[in-house]
Length: 477
DNA sequence: TTTTGAGTTGTTCGA
DNA sequence: GTCGAACAACTCAAA
Image (cartoon, rainbow, N blue to C red; front, side):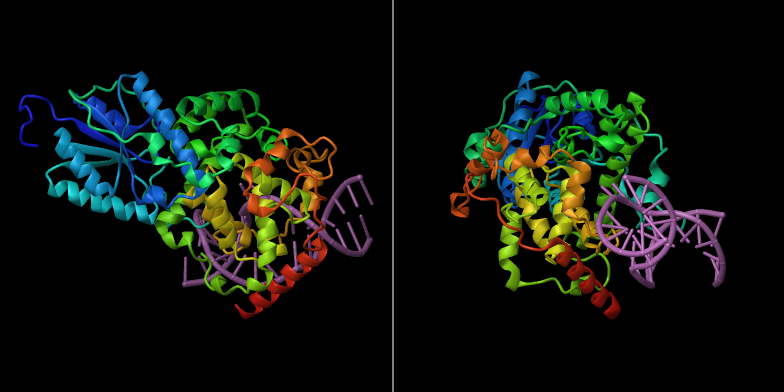
């Protein structure tokens, strides 16, 4: 950075990570308001390499949308690959940038990386500034009366439900630098590579980007919020907010959703929806408190639960491939494979089936979801699995075993959801059910015109076995 | 320090 | 069909 004009203002780098939006992005707004050119950058670093196939594909969609949104405002998204500290230091050198802004993240890998980046930048005389925006409440701002961290959801909810929150920030105008640095081409990154045959199928069902998020939430608020408490359980309907992937990549901020739900004045649904946003907060607070939430049982002793091992490997495969013979479970697993999403209630049912009827370690399910879910989020996924398995904070009691058949009667009474995703046995299966066979690897050897598989486990027996295993485990705890 | 009330989403069984 | 109880005890959070 020797030959830079001395009189030109030094640009600010804005490092996008899981905040792929222009509106209500405090770090971006601060950069724009500083009156200097802003250079938006996304880095393909180890955190991107570690993503599962579906979330990495979804990231590509999100980056494409962000890039387009920036271009529409006369800006650009600069793409670079490599370790973030090196890339940012280098980019600052090329552009003469004096500061880097980004939005704070909370998982242990991101925190360690961001600490390294800060140090490296400061060593180069570049300011590193971190902003909030991924959460409604910073983890250390929600405390019990004794100053500790909440471990039960309801008191956590009560502590925050009436808090005044700032209004979301506007999408800023971004001043372009005198010259743009080089950028990789998004298509060359091939972030869709691991999806193979599935990428084209999932693409039919996914709308990525900030504009899509705002359109969808507007529809949800107008049509489904008032009846959210019961509507969100009917699995064949599109009565949920559909915000999970948008939130995961930060295409919309939780603050924006919070305020729009309040403004909609649709109770009691509005409160139920805000509770769901706070569940996301709760997961992040627990992860920030103890990152081991992501990999081991939160409840002491539960890492020694007698999960079944290799003898039942075939059952895990059947679960993953949607051929357990329990129609609700199979429909849900196929929905996930085809769309990259699974209805919230269905997630509980397939998780209960895996951990209880099949007595498989919850981490097996956690990893498969990490591979398949476009909306994958480290904190929410870990908490969800531990909650169902019984090893988590505020978890469901172990004897609460979902019966897939009964759940289907209650929440898919006319069988629409099951018919939508299971082709076998239907004379004219819908395109959704057939799409599964286009998406799966050929090595699975499944055919739409085969017979629907027989149950791999008797529901009554599976439940009894799970309760017996739990009882024995609990006696020795 | 002790006490008290409560805790996302279920199922089954018997009256 | 409907309803309440049992399923287990334990930990959390506040008074």
